[in-house]
Length: 65
Image (cartoon, rainbow, N blue to C red):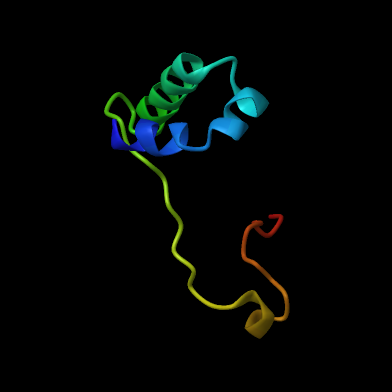
């Protein structure tokens, strides 16, 4: 619920993405449950290196086989 409360602090953004705070809470819980395959969870990515040091390659695509 801390995540929901934190998102709700950005009141001006609620209507941009959701109908109301209840819709935001429902959507957020559903997304977190989907990510956690039944258990609420969050995704995060670690930054391994600065893309500018890798020739601009961000590593977000796979080589075609």
